[in-house]
Image 1: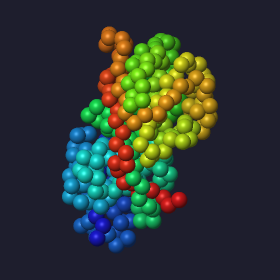
Image 2: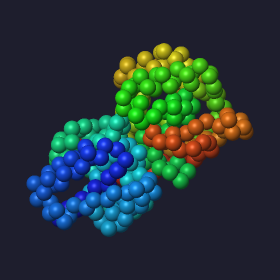
Image 3: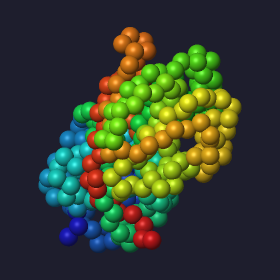
Length: 302
């Protein structure tokens, strides 16, 4: 008999989350899943989220459902991987961005996403290790990371893209560039850039339009660096010309399965902020290593 575990981020939308938990429980019972086979975990920290997912996987729970944003999903994926990979990941999108769900074509409607758990197929996807953390979608440093650090969750919910544009304009006026050494499994190179972006699929921040060849299971990530930035044009492509961001002319890019990023300038004030899947992740140096087909997800049939 199939067993399910819900790992619940308690910091977001408690009332709505309680209603969703009840909806999920009732749906599973209607699918003849005994209530005793539905487990609930309420971690109080990121470390607990990762550890509870690991323990559930070691206990041979069949499907683990994270209820939270991409940050919560990333921690659950880390736990499943460290627990040996037995459990399948079931996605019910409840975040603001839902980047991984969108890259896998998971329905955003909760009831349709629940149906997918029973009608879908299994797909093994890549994750990446970044120092002692994990990544499921993207890493940014420079302009986008600095912008995100300047936007509070409340402003993001209230103003959406406008909050990032306001923060980005202030950061853009500083005209700060970073000097980075990148050592990949292919070559060593240096960049002077306002923005470095690493993607593991064709979607970033929930939007498509990067390298159409990027897939969630090809064992590679794509590294983009921005040679120069025209602020208005940059935001036009990123927020409004959905699906066309790869047409922005000033990108350089390459693919790799392993990459070390080092700050060339030694002063701390010139060491760029790093964000992984939208969460603060410190500063350089970082070592990024792909873990091919590390997690099995239930996705819609083709």
